[in-house]
Length: 518
Image 1 (cartoon, one colour):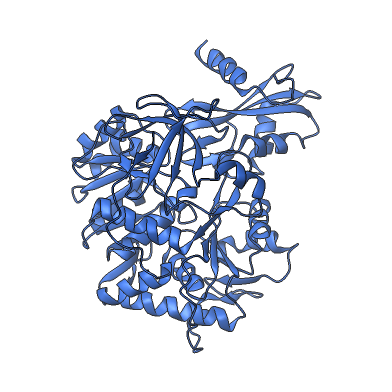
Image 2: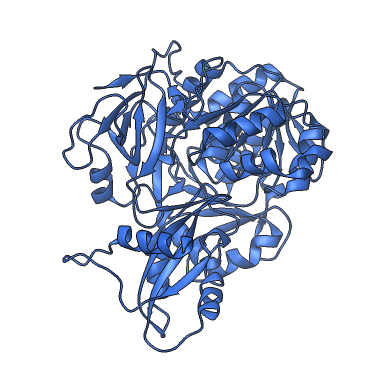
């Protein structure tokens, strides 16, 4: 019962990701490649190509070697792309960290990837300093000037010769972090071939014109934001960068720069479909809006389409697929679906209990394979083996079905992860944190469905001694990023568990749903 995408008509070229981007850039010359919306700085393709080469040369002069890891801890801006592609040009590996991470979360990622260099901004430097305090051998590259750091400007001002990194498509290119199907965030190993192949697959489907103007507000540390920024550059479009989603800045950028294409997550699409502020801006330049990272109902899809007066189409993917597995083909939209498989991609729908294929229209776990499939989880052979089968199938942990025409519909998740505004929250992380509080005896965290955010984390807590719920929520909030904040703490006598000690989250979800609707 294998579902297959069409054939991939273009051969994957023997080029690394930066070689592909730079080769194409040389054909676009003085055309604007990147505009930074807050500062209005512009970079032509010729300038972008030169700066990527200069950053690679300067990095090597500082001791960067093939296989070394550069971690990016900065909001979206041109420097993100220059540093990422420059490090890859020098034969290195790039890992992006959430620019809202605290020092503890950043330190964890720095350790996991064994980073030797980190790029950050003056505003984020105190957090970096806190994260690297216990680490050695790290060089901090700063988009500014500060004692104990190397300025970004001095790196790109290097006169050293540009390195000639080998064109090894099988070499590691990126280590984005994902929680996969369970547990704490893990590094996802993506090669140059994985990323280049996924770009070609997407381009065969979309055939996006060169006059694309794409609003790059999706964080580039996330595979969704990074992959679509790369796609825009490869096809010769113009990227308009924003450091984050803020309603007025977001709408103003679409209006000012005549943005033609948006990639969004469901909460942003809800904003576009329902918020009165949208009517005060001219969004008539939009020709297409793509939505991904979490399921979206067909009703909201239709409302956004009617208001924006352009197609609103869904896709499906994950970090482990280099970004995209299915996409809506032009003129072939089906309401509520995530589109159809990309070229040279296969999928199966498998009964999670029997591990046997189920028929069309029957929900089961989605498995996929193709040239975009990741190589495994960094430093975690056990979970890699549980996720990638011996035949190369990647178990996604998502439940859905294919209809008779090969359209994918996602209906649920096997994994315990909570998805907040497209970000994954591991219950185990919040549970482990709660259990460090002296007043907490036991804890379990589940996701509560939420119309705006998709889900919100709710903690069930067995107290060791009296404690105020609001105070405990604040205690957690001070230690984790905002999308991991608990929306409620429910005190209970005991956490329901199986005989083997596993938390019975389905019982807690039923209890929570009953409480909310009571």
